[in-house]
Image (tube, rainbow, N blue to C red; front, top):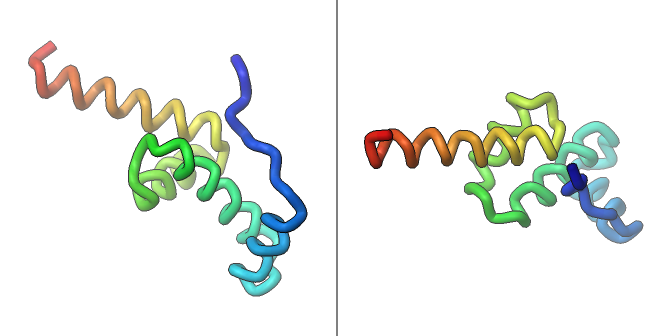
Length: 79
């Protein structure tokens, strides 16, 4: 399976550190949230919730969102 984690530029890293007041752990989470949200699979809040549920693993969070969508669609159509 191909990784969806995107490369991060130095500028993006600096921006994330600025946004998180220099907190490295939160900067990494910020970048992961931005990457997942960029895929437009769900809202930012849903992406954050999925990341928290998946211990901030972007690939697992994306799978979680997609799996949730399939379950929802099956419920809606009565499968």
